[in-house]
Length: 183
Image 1: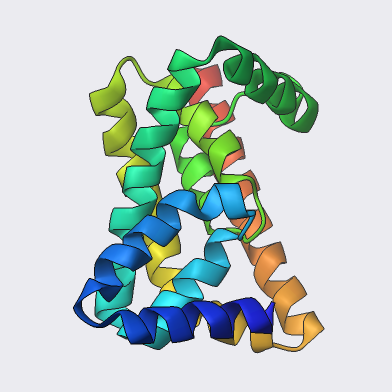
Image 2: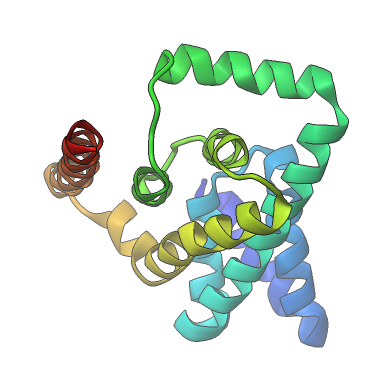
């Protein structure tokens, strides 16, 4: 993984003024290369700094979400495969937009599966992109700023971080169930 980070960083450093555009393109082709989102965002923080790295990551992730939306609805076979994956992972569980946002902060949670949830929850591409971009702000900022630190933490701090995120997820779930029950 370190070799991939160094290779990407060296490539972007040598790209000069094209580096930001290449970094955004890297976000777009990231799923094809099977590179986790956190790796690309951490590289953005290292190469571009926190502010520019987070902005470029948000742009790249947003464009990837838009492209995913277009591809999923143009390829019914892919749509079915993602729907099957959703059934396996969440077994008919309904989650809210807030929960999707929390899950997007967790490293190694399938970004496109969460995007698929948003696709099913929204009425059109405009609403999907609105919620998708809102849900991408936190990971772009957190991964860019703290991604390297999170991966460098001792195992027990990393586990504590994940437990806190899981608790937040279930708190939101419980709150939504209470609201639905009251309605």
